[in-house]
Amino acid sequence: MLAFIEYLRARLPAVVKICFGLLACLVLADAFLVDKEHAHTAAEHLPGFWTVFGFVGCALIIIVSKWFGHLGIMTREDYYDE
Image 1 (cartoon, helix red, strand yellow):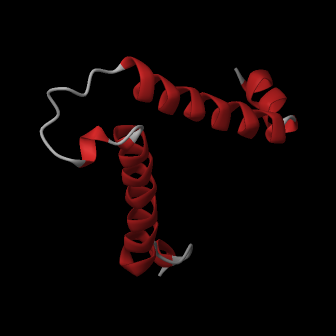
Image 2: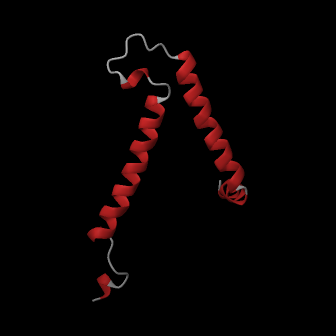
């Protein structure tokens, strides 16, 4: 498994392009394959709404978690030595 991670890390630009390609495919699949006739809100009629919503939600969770961690959860390395 470690060799696979190192393999991907060595080819990071290609991995990023593949991930963006998959995201684009999801948006296109949502735009053309998902039936939006019974959508509950106006936003759900937009192509790729739930894809973008999920991406933004995950990004916000990461940003808020890092901010919260730097507020007080993370301590000095020598905290327990005192």
